[in-house]
Length: 377
Ligand code: NAD
Ligand code: GLY
Image (cartoon, rainbow, N blue to C red; front, side, top):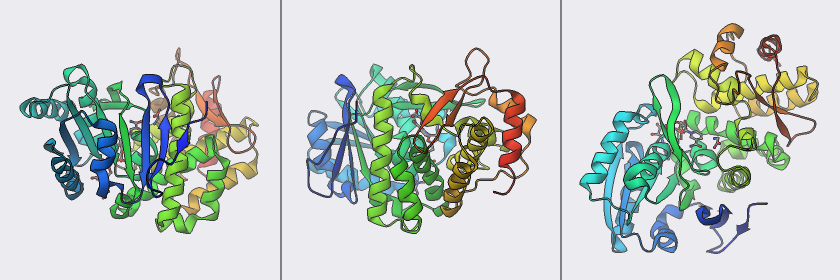
């Protein structure tokens, strides 16, 4: 079923809906939406009189502004700051968040408002999913990656020291408010890294988004408001559509969102977390996946070159320096898509916009794909 799209509010607010029966919710997208946050919140959370705003310390001013608006609309507000960075997705941070929520007299009439990137969304989302066996959640994503990916779809969770995202829950938000204006303060490297996920949606589902990126790379890199509005909207449409088809990743469909990710997770793990940003590793992983697809006769040389050109134009790294096949292969064996000890890869087929989950690929083929992807294209 296609994701429904409507324009209910003022013209600068674009609304999409994720249709999941009683767990359905709107995604509001627009520049400056956080300036009128209380109105959007009221439309969806009228009965929630207590808001716990969990926010990234880096964007305290935005969180405080949202807090003042909610207080102004006669709500009790608790502001809880969380240090920036992946280390906040830990058992210790979660425990201290639960304690703070208890101290703030959080109950089932409260709502968690997560303001920040994917780290905050995942951590605060899991706190909402688990506290009092589940309280409502509103996502206010402020990085490109979180606006186009992590805030939609209900995956929440934390890391254990030896495994990323291994403890968590599916917990759909009640509302997602995406203010594209917040992206203007994002460091370049973070912004560009997020573009890898946008390229991904173009490859797996939306050739027109891929073409838009090719034709408007400069406007996208300059974060022009109209270009931002388009890429965020299209990405959310694609994500919502896949999530609607396979909410809990049981039917195989949601796995297509992991295009490039089997290689990427191995790249991140073997380089040491923090060396590459996630989107950077995804860009290099998509290049490896494209080479694997070409090796298997699923796409041609021109397809591989076209994707590489776009990654290059968007200033994403696409060649992994010093790629070591055995080390990457070993790390891949921990991939979540491994089923009965067999690796499965999301690979393109034919023209842009179509991928499939493919198993039965040999170690030699993976080695060969990594080798040919590591040479200048
Ligand atoms: P992040 O949350 O660490 O944010 C990146 C950096 O940007 C941080 O330093 C943060 O302080 C800063 N920042 C945030 N908003 C800002 C703003 N508006 N202006 C300036 N700086 C700002 O990283 P991320 O890339 O947003 O998210 C990565 C996390 O998302 C990972 O933990 C990953 O596992 C998770 N993730 C989850 C899903 C999902 O479906 N739940 C999907 C993809 C990724
Ligand atoms: N980011 C992958 C997913 O949401 O399934």
